[in-house]
Amino acid sequence: MRVARGTFLTLLCWVVLALLPPVLGDWNASLLAQYVIYGIFALSLGLLWGTAGILCFGQAIFFGMGAYSMAVVTLGKLPALGSSQWAGFALALVLPAVAAALIGWLLFRGRALAGAQLGIVTLCAAVVAETAARRWDFIGGFNGLFGVPSLAFPFESDALSGIGTAYATLGAALAAYLVGLAITRSPLGTVLAAIRNDENRTIHLGYNVRNHKIFVFTVSGGIAGLAGALFALQFGFVSPSLVGFALSTEVLIWVAVGGRAVLMAAFLGALLVRSAETVMSATLADYWLLVLGILFAATVVLAPQGLLASVLRLPPARRLRRRSRPTSTDTAALAPRAAEEASAGAS
Amino acid sequence: MATAIALSIDMLSFTLTLLLVTLGLVVIFGMMNVINMAHGEFFLIGAYAVVAVTRAGGSFWLGLVLAPCLLALIGFAVEWLVIRHIYRRFIDTILATWGLSLALKQGVILLFGPGSQSMLNPIPGTVEVLGVSYPAYRLFIMGMGLALALGTYWLFFRTALGLQARGVIANRAMAASLGINTRRMDWATFATGAALAGFAGAVMSPIMSVDPQMGMGFLVPSFLAVLVGGVNSLVGAALGSGVIGGTTTMLSARLDQADAQIVVFLLAIMVIRFFPQGLTGDRR
Image 1 (cartoon, chains in turn orange, purple):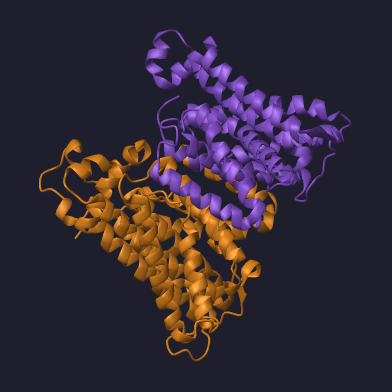
Image 2 (cartoon, chains in turn green, blue):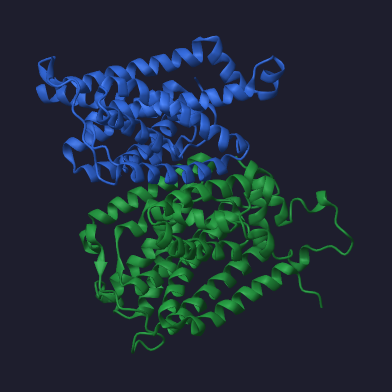
């Protein structure tokens, strides 16, 4: 059986990631765990932006909410939920998902916001969330919360070693990836792609566009919350900047550089940019941000699909393949390939 | 009564200040449909240009003249290097200009350091207005905001050049076949917007702490002002600045500043949600 290049490379990436932690050693494995956490966060935005074409400038709201949920629960500030990490994970999945559903309902009900309005409104929401987190003393106010215990899995006994953390984080990433993959490759995902390519046409085909968008927004919020919870455990602290505007735009950079239309590319984009940052900030010091900004602008202009999307693109789902060779116009509405012009020309 | 007058002048002051900062955005976003996330950095560079000129021994007023010229050059370079490739990719303008804003801000930090610079007030003293004494320089800023808003309106809606610029934006092919050099109009409009942002930064430098983060503080309120008022019109921008500036000042009198900001932003989100075309709609 012939395996498509994208499928092969995606599998290869996961195999390499699975083999890496023991090779890297304890210290570097926990560094890898950090990157993978950012990768999960990027995955959540990739699902939202790449699949459904919803450009959210406030994705960190959900990430930060997950991080704060985990911190608040494990520090015993919510006695009703106990202080186990399981309860923390549960709250970190549910609370951001519910918040995303509410925000999604507000954004997409009636005449949905899109384009500039959507971007600025979500950006503004992130600023509001950050300011609110600074002002709310229950969650530590300006300083945030410290002393969050590290990841202990599965029985909450001892904290995991760096390698163990890396495997637990990779497991979470794989789970999030499979959820995202299941959505994008299901008929539901095809509708989402149709919304991204031509929202009006999808409405006129009889789909409930609003509910589809709210659904993907909710799932994406939950995945971002999971990443946030892992972040809180990994770093041991949470602070208002996790909810804010800066992190929201940083994740946009990762996803845009990796490639928004392919989940694996978005995920690896975060790993790529973050590890480049670690390597380069040592040599470039203060020039790193300057270089990153220019590289990012150059990527957007020269490679709008991202650097990794074309090699990691999976073949279309089986039900979308044709026996005879499809003509390009036939597949335009279905194949993700048509995303190029559509996502760029949208709004 | 005196507090009421003081509050009204404060509201008017913040409104006109915000309008001054927003003008550059109105030209670039409203006219060219390019979301310029680097607007805050254009503003920032304007302020730092004045700092650099005064440090080199020049007067503040020289800096005020040179800053928009510098920004027009930067705007031209940015348009030529980046923006002209992505006019048809609306979302990508947000991303590319965001990358630029990171780079420009870091460039300023490398040149001037991360600390804040302070400027001497070029017009010290106060002026008696309706029985309230008010800082003279703030009145100067208000006057500048008003004058530039009217000037921009005149340029784009009352001159042949402005008509051509708007023609290019409305229908590029038609404008080109009428013999307008559309490429020149593009960069000229973008450079004008950048120069306006730089001028705003230069004018504001004496009353703000000039630090690398000062652009961010104005970016969100000015975007909100444009969207609340209505994207395509200067009248809308004035109205939006009034709504955002006025409510912020009014609430700041009662609430903590951070709380006031939260309330204003949430209000603005609601307005944009229910009036996506802005309060002025499609009218000009």
